[in-house]
Length: 246
Length: 287
View: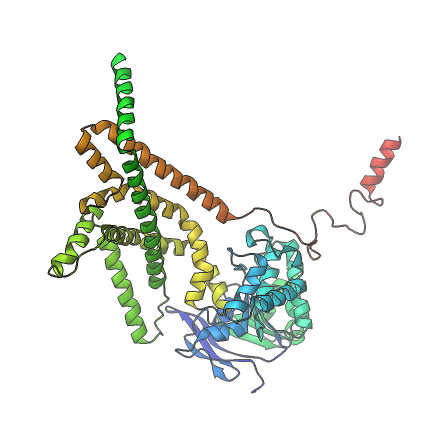
């Protein structure tokens, strides 16, 4: 088990007295593309935010190469630099151009020189097809373009794992494709990804591990072919029937 | 009606007389006022931003008790500072600070320079107002910006200096302008500790010439010139900070489908040769 990048053990999270996540266990190994699916309110996003320590877990542990990052007093900044995050609402820095958005983290956190950061940023912006817009500001871009920049910004930090929090949910239908294509290309290159999504086709075809959540617990997880073709639990069957036939 | 015009021409003549006699003093007063207001506003803004950063340091229940105690203490101190200096008149603050130093030190310490004492008063006063404005400015920035910065590994100070403050500064610029204009006018209370700003020139000139109304008219125009100039400069600065609406496109975006380019294999686009619509149009033209 020591080859795992992330190992989540008995993770629980409560907001006040309301328990959102209960006893979550799963493992992310290098090259894994894990999709977390489930109905709205089942705790998918909270789980992802806990993994990046944007929410503090109430109990349980998150082992990053064997080190518990969820323990009290752990310095989250260095860990977060190695675990990239792409948000539903993009969260690009509004006061910077596209290029600067992808450079700032490398320079401030990664302590890279300006030239090095710029070359690296341009490399990843080209990968997501945003080279034409390096001088634009976030407010001048469409949703799909913003999300591609956000992916480039996360990639530019050379993360070991990339977390996606419903990356296409805030997009107009015609822009979903351009973002999913970029994500699929990343998966093909062997990027380790943890994706919360409502795109069932992506979960089924691109990922190699699917986690189905319902009411704050992991209801079923495993190989996407198993889960999609032959779901074991009633909740999973209901959920998939609604999504795949609806 | 006749009396009004007579008064106007009398006033005009008196203003010319006053300006001829005290013109350089008035200009000197304007310079002293501007110097104090601009520097005081700038230092006040620094104090405000510092208070804003200190009072927004996240304080989570799982942090260690010493850190939490200091964060609480800092917040209480800032709170007291804001309430005291926002809640008392600047003219009294000037008196307390200027005469307080020799009073409480048993005449050992004195303010050597009236300008420095005035600057301290104006800065502290502006800082108290700005502290609250800055806190409001930080709250107005989308929490997603902070999360985005945290997610790439920035700490609180880095997030503040690179992401939040530049955006909050733009939001706060009208408020900073407000404070500058208020300070240009309100520094007139510094005559109480003997600082030679524009209003104290008026008092001196009137004392010597007894031409009260003409001098007040000159002062009104002088203050208005300074505040209008500040307004114009601030507007220009806001415009400049917003940046250009256009940006340079380096090449075409390959991934995005331009509107209207979708073609269904069956019917084609409206201007396709296979399109029935196109054929119909063409046929119609021929017929």
